[in-house]
Every structure is written in structure tokens, then in C-alpha cells.
Image (cartoon, rainbow, N blue to C red; front, side, top):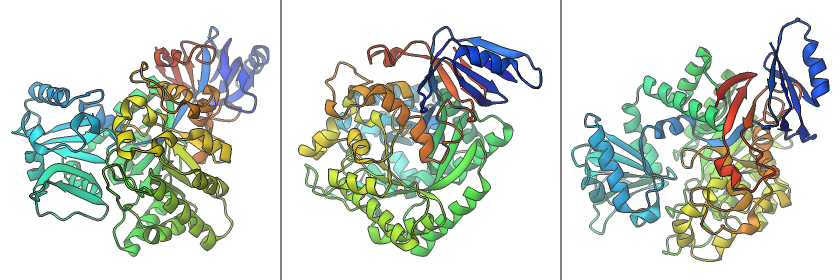
Length: 539
């Protein structure tokens, strides 16, 4: 099939940035350029097939957005849970949970997500959930998905008690009497709570969650994503969707490797990732590397920082350099891409040093390793990572002023004025990739671009900007969220640009966001999403 898209304002994210027409043949782009040439090429289909002509009416066309960091199944799951985003007080959080419980009297347990630390006084207690739902377990994920808040019934269901030991890299919070408060974070959450919840989740549930995420992606203009935490169940759901032919966004995944305290077991997970990368390498689903969580978050005071938080806490990293270096070296030797969650400056230094170790061990080779988030980072370390070719993978929506109150309070010093320094990455020569880390933040890319271009809030645009000197030109922001995000996962010859030979993955907007005030990004809609030449969303 041949399709001709003409009379558009096409931003290609390629060397030749602007065009007016696109020719699509058999799911790939045959030509990008001017209308007259496009008509001639489209009309010369060697199979003599009819040409489907779409007059864009001057509409703006972009490459499909490539979310550089997401949790796809989790995004779909969150859509079915109590939405606590925007709940700015404990009363409002309790009201929403109570209303959901009353509307779902037969639900065996209540799942919620999106609470802000500032809204609950930092570290919430089980009694605050017991007051609204006491007869069923309640599990409420923080907005960053690094902490989970349980009521008493949920603590009982998971078997977490006052005497349950904290695993390395995690914490069961306790009061002054040693009683579990209901707040569980980092590896304690992953090892003690998530497996219990997974036991209540069926394959049908996961398939429904994936379908929900794909519908949302199509409507928002996300045509590819990088999943940062694959496990067996999530990957199985993606494989089922791929085999059924229902994937409408391309997925590149990183296999999650958790620290076990045993190097042999850690390296076995790397070997598993190598097997999965070999088994899953299609146009729709690829396993491209491993993911490690070196630290936690600033909001939870679990990110590893060079000097203490305002409350005096000074957490250790989840992975020490001695534990991490063999994992990174093994993955590097196997040709895997390594993604390292490092929010605090100390965690960033560990990540950089682990890559240095891999280079020393394995010598020259093609590498595209990356550090995720980099919210608190010193300029000297930016220069170090740039010199090593490490990609900075960052999420503008995490810098939204509406969610910064607790973040800034926990740092409490000059570090808040160096938060999320995107231009410093590119100035140093480091590749920069944008994503959303959904469901820790909304996955819609246009509001993400608004934050990137203005440092203002997409949730409350009236708020003052957050370190406005770190804003980026909109054109650059879009390139970081399309072309560069595709490059980081090795897909630069498949998607991320509107260029001849690549998959025909692009979106059409209802307005010109480049020639208007940045606020137009908040009202702009995606009126068509095309993936592999097929329209998967049309408004």
C-alpha cells in the first residue's frame, strides 16, 4: 500500500528538519520532502496500487514520540487504580480512597497511586488508611513508585510485622516503639510487597493493563517506548501481544537486575538478559539491556547524596560500587546496554565509575550505556559521563514545580538550584534523552515538552518556573524525546525521525506548537497517530 501525506508542516528531527510531504509504502517512509516530488514518487508505485492521499491541511507533523524511560505494564495498571495525582492534602487522599472503596464493595483489596510526600507530611502511617478502609487491604504507591503505604490489613496480608528484617537497600519504617508504620520503600517494597501483589495478578490482568497503556500511548502520540524494568510477567504479556499482532507501540526493554548480595546470582541475571536479548529482537519487541537501581529518590530521602539531607539522613546506595562493577562489566562484555537509576550525586559517581571499570576490563567496543534521572549532579561528574559517552536519560515532568515542594525541602540548600540541569548535559557533549518514567508521572509527551521548554508546571501553569535558566528550546526538547531516545536504544535506523527507509511512525497535531506560545502545548491534541504506516488513532 502507498500513502501520500501532503500539504503539511513536517518536523522531521532529521538533518533536513522541515518538509511538507511524506510518502509511505508498505509501512516505511519512501520519501520526505516537497509536495510535487512526493506526488510523482507516490504515483510511480511499481505494483500499480491505488494511492491513499491525505491532505494534512497545513497541520504540524512530528515523529512519533519515543518515551525514553517508562514502565509500560505499570502505566496500564495505574490507570485502573485510585488516582491520587493532584490530591494536595491528606483529607483529599482519604476522600478519594474512601469513594473508590464504596464504589467497589466487592474488590478484595484497594490499589492507589500518586500520593505526594508533601501532602501526607512526608512519611504516612497505617492508621491514616485504616481510618477510611479497615476491612480490606489498601496499597497506595507514592507518585515516584519508590515507596508504598499499607494499611494494617495489607501489612497482615504481606506478612510484614514489627520483627520483619529490612532487606539490603530497603526499609520497613517503624515508630519509636519499633512498630511497623505501614510505609515500605525501595528493595523492601520490591522483595516483600510486590511479589504478594503479583500473586493476585493474572495473565488476563496484565494483558488488559498493556492494552490500556497502548490505547493511551496511541491517543497521546507515543509510538515507541523504552521499558525500564522488565520482569518475567511483563515480558510474557508483551510477547502475547506481539504474537497476536496488537502492539501499536514499539517496545525496547531493559531486564531488571536486583542486588542479591551474591555476585554469582547477580551475574546469572545478566546471563538471563543476554538470552532474552537474543530471543526478542523484532521490529516490535526487543530486549536491549539491563537496568539497575543504584539509589532511591530525593522525596523519600533514599537517593544517595554526597552530603546529608535537611533532616540529617544520609542513606547508603542500593548497589555499592564493588557489587555493581562486576555486573556492569559482564553486561558490557556481552554487548548489552546498561541503564543505571542514579538520582543523587553519589549514585551518579558510582554509575560513572562502574562504566570506567567496564572500559578498563573490556577495552574498546561499541557502547551506549546510560544513567537514568540525574536529578542532583555536580558539573564535574557531567563532564566525566560525557567523556565516557554515557547518555543522560532525564524526565522533564519530574521537574514540574507542582511536585517540587518536598523535593526542595529535603535537599534544603544550594543543590535545589542545580536540579535537573539538562543544558549542562548537552553543553558537555553528553547525549540527552527525554522520557516520562510513567506511571511515576503522566505519559503524555506534549506537557512533558512544555516543562522542558519553560521549566513551568504542566499541572499548575500559574506557578513560577523551576530554575528557568535550565529550559531548552522546544525544537531541541522534541529531538531529545524522539530522535535521541531512539538512538539510545539502538533504533536510530528504525524510528525516531521522519526519514526515508525508517518505519512510518509519526503524529499529526491540531495546531502549530512551534510557532505559538509554549502554553499551546498544554492544549494541543494529537489528531492522528501512524505506526508502521497504519493509523492507530484518529480524532
